[in-house]
Length: 156
Image 1 (cartoon, rainbow, N blue to C red):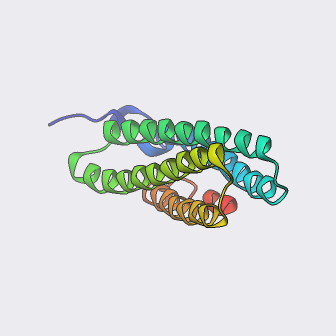
Image 2 (image 1 turned 30 degrees about the horizontal axis):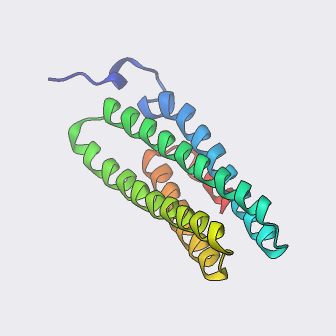
């Protein structure tokens, strides 16, 4: 029988050991995206194109950081669990990647639009919808991993 990393990690369980370090980093990046979205909305209302561009670039960079965080979480999860549990976790994390991809594509579209003219209010609304969908999935992942499931509620 295959031994998993978690067989020798700690008395607190496998997920508590590696993922307690991974989840806080994810949540830090999630908070940064939330702040950048608020900033983008504010700068859009004040018609400050330069700040809008900075907000969009920060969003793109931080979304990439979230993708890295999710990759680390996925790797740690797969390395610490038996195959029967892995499939469920992978489905949740794959959905998060899908939502993250949609958010990233929308931000890139807004960046291109800003170069031509200005950001449409509908585009900001779509970002908010994408964001809420991603946050819901991250909360689901936290619950599935049983790591501080309430922390994500503070960034919605």
